[in-house]
Amino acid sequence: MDGRQLSRRALVASLAALPSLAALPAVSAARPVVVTTARLAAGGFGIVGLDAEGGVAFAEPLPDRGHGVVRRPAGDDVAVVARRPGRFGYVVGAKSGVVRAQLDLPDTRHFYGHAAYSADGRLLYTTENAFDEGRGVLGVWDAAAGYDRLGEVDSAGIGPHEVRRAESDGSLWVANGGILTHPDSGRIKLNLPSMEPTLARVSPGDAEAERVMVLPATLHKLSMRHVAVHRERVAVAMQYEGPEGDIVPLIGLTDRDGTSCRLLDLPESLAMRSRQYTGDVAIDPAGAVVGAGLPRGGFFAFWAAEDGRFLGSVEAPDGCAIARGPAVGRFVISTGTGGRIGRVTAGPQGVEVVWTSVPAIAAFDNHLMA
Image 1 (cartoon, rainbow, N blue to C red):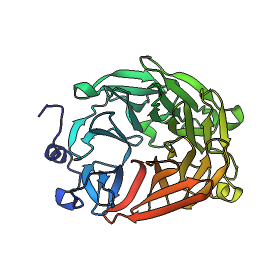
Image 2: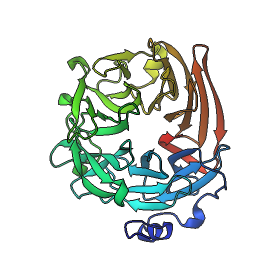
Image 3: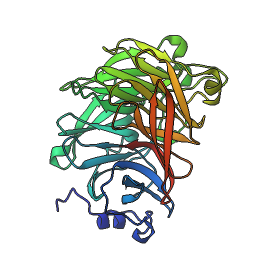
């Protein structure tokens, strides 16, 4: 085995805080159809593959809470990185969960929770905080050579959280939350009066990101956090850092060149419940429906992409993670309270969900890959 690759045994041996192998859930022989991070019912955290029936196809321990997961194009690698201000990052096999590589992060950086591969799968990009410089960067890793670090790209903003690749042209879209943090201050937000969220794009081959969109000054406390991409259109999920009693739109949907943005409204009763906070966001495979998790409000919401019309919601305590499903209007969702996976159908006729319980999971984390 290559020296840069870690076996399951080597990883567990190197991280004494992890649960014992005997504490991990029993695995099925079925192929995983969902990969996510979670708090395990047996204790500790892990990256988990689930089969179509909700059985555990694999469970690999993590030293702490994981966050986003992303699969390498035309390959079996899945990258997982820590949430802010964590520093661990691993690459595992999508079918087996076996650890293949560890991301060796510089001392002056920490992860923001998300990653994306280049269209050809040769490079991995991770959102990071250059905390002593007060700026955001995308770390660049050579997936074709054991995940050596090649360098970084400026993110054109502070606090880059999620990065997603556009299938149409291979460009990367980055949600810069605009919030300054430093590991010496934990998760405290240091610049709320002057924060400036931005949506940025990195075209293939570029050495830095291009700032594409900045919200109006009156909405400068709407922190851009998560993105979903369908062809040239980008959905942005935001979290408001102003007074909780304010009612502001939390989902933006750009036009087809990304330069202007329609803000999507919730019915007033749901807007008041939301506590002005969205989690994950997704667009269905046809680009017809946008869905988002609103964990503090306890629901998922869905809109028609064409005109921004609200389609309906699904009740889900601490419901955050959402990914596009296999067809028009189809999504997969999960909850952070109890281990439940939902299969959603959303359209002009309304929204329906079918839930599956996963006893091996105490709580799903904020993102999943279907």
